[in-house]
Length: 417
Image (cartoon, rainbow, N blue to C red; front, side, top):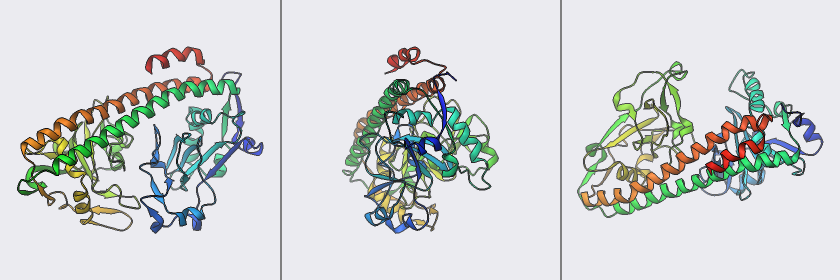
C-alpha cells in the first residue's frame, strides 16, 4: 500500500466523532408485517442495494406508525449502506436527492460525520475495496448459521484512508462513472416502463375471441436443482432473484449452474419468465413477468424451479406477451391462484387458465413495432452501464490501494464517458 494511505479502525473514527456505523432496528422496534404498505418510508434490505445505487422505487415501504418506532438505522443522503446478514458485503450509496429511508436489521448505515476528514463518496468506495471486503469474508464464515457480521465486529474493521485531497480525487473519478451508470439506469427504466404502457394501451383495443394463455403460448416450468449444481459451470441459472420488483430483469440474480435441464427450460434474451414463488412481505414478485436481458455471457441460461418460461405461439409476439402479463388483470388473476403464509406459491393452472381477448394481427404488429425499439434501448442502456461498471471495478482495487495514481486512470474514464 502507498505510504500516503493510513490504516485505522472504524472504532477509532467513531470515538473521534468522524464516523457513525449503525444497523437497523431489531425486536420490538422492527416493523410488523401489517405495517408494510405501497407508500411511506423505504425499508432498505440487502436486495435493494444495486450496482447503480439504492433501489428506492422497488423497496418495500413502511407506514408512519412503524416509522415512529424506529430508533436507529435512519438513513440520510450521502450514507453508504452495507449488507451484513445473509448476503454479506453488498454496498450502495445514498445520493444527495435520496428520499426518506430506514435500514432493515440486515443492513448497516456507514456515515461520515465530518466531510473534511472522510469524503462520504470515498467511504463508499473504500467499503467495496478488496481489503475491506476480505475482512468481511473472513468474519462472515465464523457464524454457525447464515453468513453474518455483527455491528460490534463491523466497528472493529480496518479502513485505508489517504489524505482528503486524494480521497476527493478518487471519489470524483469513480463517481463520474457511477453517475453515468445511474443515468443509463434511468434511461433503461424509463424505456422499459414506456414499452409496457404503450403495449398495454394497444392490447386494450383487442376485440377478438376470448382465449386462454395455454391455448396460444408454450408454458414450461423451470428446472429443479441441487446445491451441488450451483458450485461451478459455464451455464447460468435464472433464479427468483432475477425478477425485480420494478418488473425488470436483475442480472445479479444469475448463479453458476452445472446441472441437467430440458431444452424447454433454456431461455435467451427477450424471453419471458414469470415468478411462481415469493418471499416478499407484500407479494410484490409472485406472478410478475420479466424479460430476460443478459450481455456478454456465452453459456446457456436455464430457468429455475421458482420461474415459468412463457413463449408466444403464432398469435402473439414476445413483446405483446410481456405487455399482457404486465396488466392489472393478470396481476389480479395470478394472485387468486396463490397460497402460503411465509412463502407464497402460485398454482400451476394460473398461467394456462388466464383468459383474455385475442388481439388482431394488426394490433400485435403495431404494439411490437412500438415496444421493440424501446426495449432494445432499455437493454442497450443497461449493457453500457454494465461495461462502465466493469471499468470502475477494474480501476477500484488499484486506486484504493494507491497502486494506481489518479492521473493514470483519468484517460480511461474520459474515453468511457
